[in-house]
Image (cartoon, rainbow, N blue to C red):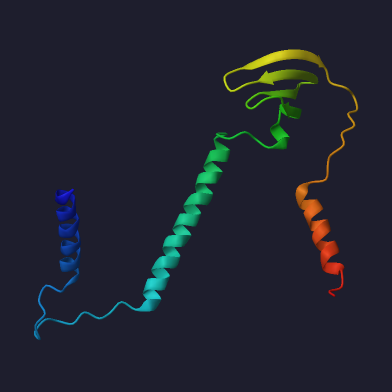
Length: 146
C-alpha cells in the first residue's frame, strides 16, 4: 500500500513538473497564447467528427444487416405473451400465416402448439400509461386553484 502511494505521489509530481516552463528567465521567448476562437473551433470540429462517426457506424450496421429490419422486412411477429413464472413465458408468434405457441424459459424454447392464424383478430389495446398520465395531468391543470 505504501509503495502504491509513492507511485501515485511520484506521478502527480511528474505531471506538475511537466506543466512548468523549461527555462523561466527573461531571455526566453514568450509564446503567444492560443486564441479562444481556435479552441472553440477545435472542440466543434472534434464533436462534429464524433457525431459523423456515430452516424456512419449506424448506417454501416444497418447496411450490413447486423440488426433486424423493422416492419417492412419482418417475417416473424409476436402476437402476444404472458408471464407464467419468474423466468417463464408463454408466447404466441405468427410465422407465415401460422401461430406458434411457444414456452420460453431461461434455458430453452419449446413448441407447445401450432395452429392456423385467424383471419380477423380483435385485439383490445389497453391505454398506455403515458396516455393515462397525460389525460390526468391535463384534467388537473384545467381545474381552478382554490
